[in-house]
Length: 350
Image (cartoon, rainbow, N blue to C red; front, side, top):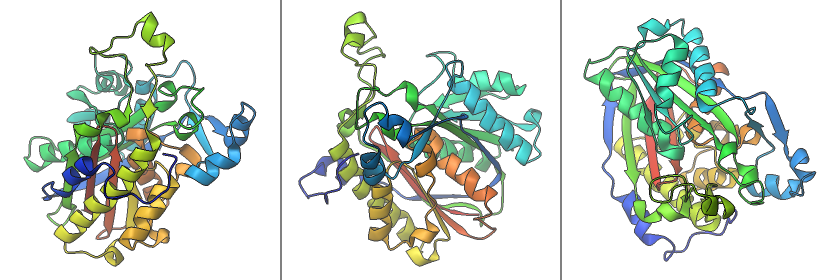
């Protein structure tokens, strides 16, 4: 995401149109009972990357990222997801045996099968059903809404929703513009029944596969299996058209947020806290400016962690709760966007 020029009407029109036509719904009667997060101990500052030939000033000026966390070689996605989940349960004084369902949003699973959620279930000592969801940087929004449906129907009382990604395993160290952007981390929440005043008073989810090639890992799946030839071409690594993704992200973020604000009959002034996907500070700044959101109400931690994909929003949420940035009755604006292309936005009443 390396270009900050204003998007023109001709750029990605087919993609952006999809974001303007999605249905907006409400899903209340659900509350967040607990939250927690985890980031690996190994912190890589921009200065350390400078020793490898990266331009530290470029990184901070173009992205706002000052450091990122990297998992150790022995850590898999389930390890960091488990740690975030364990801390979440501990913070809420909730026993693993009380969890009815585990949903894990990730694009960096331990292995194709079984699901990483099943590994986390075993590690927690839970017997809850468990499954993964894959929607990249909007994955936590998708998983959260999915879990809320189970609560709303009365099927389950306690759902553990996790976002976790080891993005350092997906990026090419030789890709100077992409490698510094991503980090590793995990965040988790437990949701349960709440009052009809709580939950998403408005939300929207969307996707447009026409933009799939803008941000993808070409090899490693059934269409292009990993082979010596694909590995030699580095097709197992994340590839991004930074300029196009940057423009799309700003437009989709602003469009989807305006949709949910209008549906909730709220103005930007009535939002108490904003949790945007932590991709790039220039995207956040531009969207906040377009929407009239004061930056003091926009939570930012990408300077410490970089882009952690599905972990981004729950990690920010857990830190905001820890810092007592949210209180009962307040409106929290949440928005995720990224590969797919996929997005999700909502206004949560705490």
